[in-house]
Image (cartoon, rainbow, N blue to C red; front, side):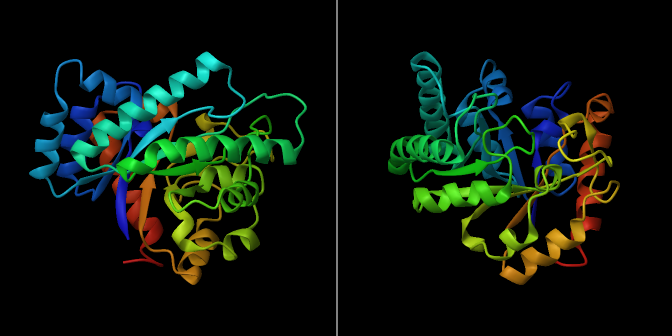
Length: 276
């Protein structure tokens, strides 16, 4: 299983250039590039510079993170999603990064689960159609907050199945899986080929519905049953990649090298019982 770094883990004080250098130093296989960090990088560098880095590095780009709040948007809001998608497809074509994470919308009002599914599937079809000519896939990420329109693995997987597109899959994030009591039974029934991205993290022991990103902690240092998730992934035949992703402000204030080193060490320790 390849190990990736998600730039949210150093979001406050780092840059894409710094993350690349330290991730290379500590032996990460892959990196998930944040959209905002990419745009900042390109203010002083070119896409060709980024391409040259990956050509000379053992580490490769895996996914862009993320197009947020893709459903239930007004015309202007959706147009921005489309423009960002085009931008990422163009950059991805140069650096060979062929996955984009997409996130559902929060606080949408009183829509039924069926209406949420229909709207989300509609949007996924449109974005997938736009991405397909570039060979780009969309990884749909549920968020384990009560006010997110899609907040469990089972609900997200149903939407991906309903979309029924080769270039649409799901993101499995351990924090979000735990936060709203997603079911291991749903994960056991999933096609591993439809799990496009796997995020590993842990969290403090708060009640269902109370957890937020700032409660994340390093893998193995919280209450998430990582063993059960990892064991289930091995049972269904998933062994592609794992990406450490935390949004904890405390870690953002750490020395960047320490954060990236700790992410690698804790991720390796968490997965080694189940994956080489």
